[in-house]
Length: 188
Image (tube, rainbow, N blue to C red; front, side, top):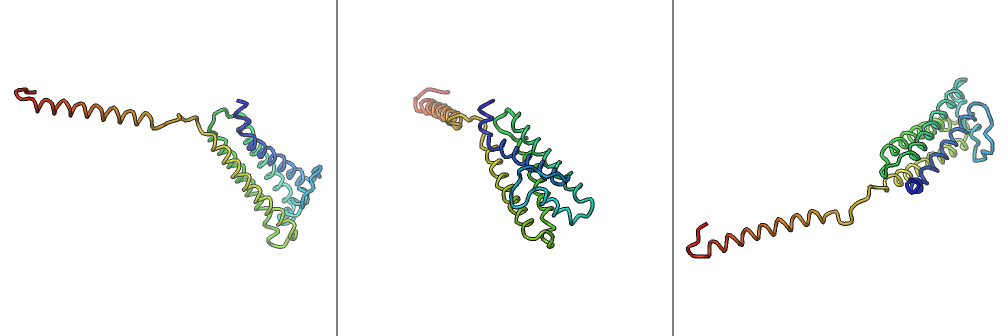
């Protein structure tokens, strides 16, 4: 179990990071200042700029959407942590759903920047988040796929042994038939 968790450490860290990030984004949309979030824009500024295009319901919509994405990443974290099988197909699907939801949210937040609201800082911040989300998606999918079930060292050895046995039986039968035909007076 611990070996499997260690093999999935990157996936666990990525999903935990994005869950915390979208929780801070949700707090920023709710009007609370996220502590220690110093990037190009703080999550509160990013949500404020994006919500300004949605009218008075903008902060509520973005806070709800950010909370849903946060819950999806928390679900992905728990799925990766508690899945004990070497090949994590369910974890791949949950991470894919969380990342698609996050991409839709961030792309939706970047739309006001396309129309001139918020200037270049909002667009640059959203574009950076989209690129990082895609990179995280590829890294997590690679890590979850590379843990395949243990394979036999020579998977074709059984097939080769079967073919050799069939060939030997065939040669033995041909040998018996040939000897029976070459002996005079011997009838099958």
